Image: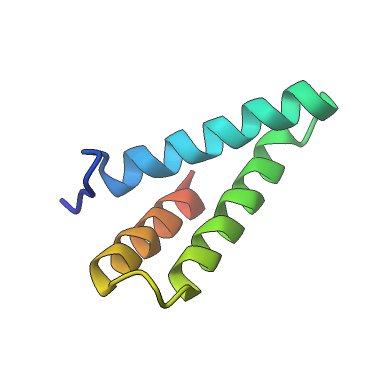
Length: 73
């Protein structure tokens, strides 16, 4: 099971990220499609971090796995 320095599995981090974004969207917009928007933004975040070459391959691999887990939510 792939974990990063804060001890979250990719699945746990995916859920945490979508939940945090969802809470912000609901507070700001009170939208019906909050979860779909949350997932879209979380996927965008993961894509950007995977494309940022500053991070090493371990970090990029972790975020690729987080992205896969978000897609399963």
